[in-house]
Image (cartoon, rainbow, N blue to C red; front, side, top):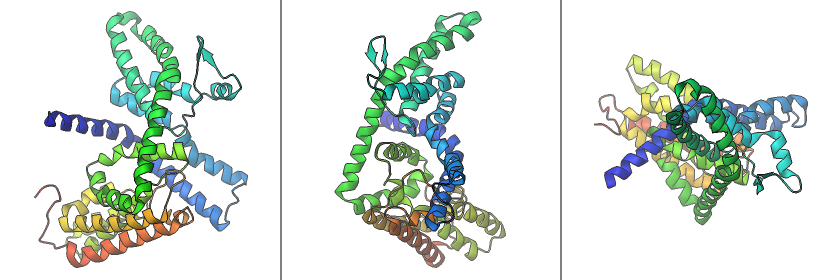
Length: 366
């Protein structure tokens, strides 16, 4: 029974990783752009009411507004159903004319059943579950109809069934579930933000290294959709800086030319680009002490981010480019403190204690 649970848990992680990782490039890029816009507005470089700002902010924010559509393609590939049918079914949840009609007095009724007024922009869970159910329906219909009519009838029937189902049942149910998840996380965070920050932040390097962190991303994105801000990812702010600090220390201390060359490129990717996985897998994870030092520094930074109430108003990538913008957000001093502790602590700790050329010990494999 225990082995079965472990397999199921691993399967869930693999599914979420397979769906979320393909869209991460868009999330990271728009997260950096949004951070730059926040910084430019704070410094007075761009007027938040100007047309230039409007266009650039649209470029940064549109990806998340239409996130369910991006996820529909990614999820369709993972669940094995027609991606364009998945797109059609998911697009119903965002259709402007329908959303306007739902907001009017009296709303909309489908076959006498009232359609709940729910906003699905920036959401994640409704789209994932809708596409999963679509995949089950499509597979069963493909078994029923002969091949000569399958390509026409199955897509039509899938849309006829799943579009109303998404609006009447799946979407509202998943929105309710998302609300409860957000409430549960908020309850834990409110109980003691310092403890919550330390525990989550300290474990975050392990969660990223094992890709279990993808289970947490829906909660963070859901927090923004429900509350307009997220306090989960902010407590982990120090991780990218800690990985960067440890990588730089190893690059400076090693005599291995190949490691210097590779490590330098990976340091830049995490420090300036906010992409930590290559540096984790390519450098830090190979040295057990360095990795543990990173965990400790990130945990300490998480305490300060938790105490400060640091919060993201949207998905932001944590790197040196976006740090000035993050400093202007709620609990900005917590972001800066976590970044400084993460980078300086991991750099000094790794340089002095965490790296020996002859002591190459992987965290997960001896």
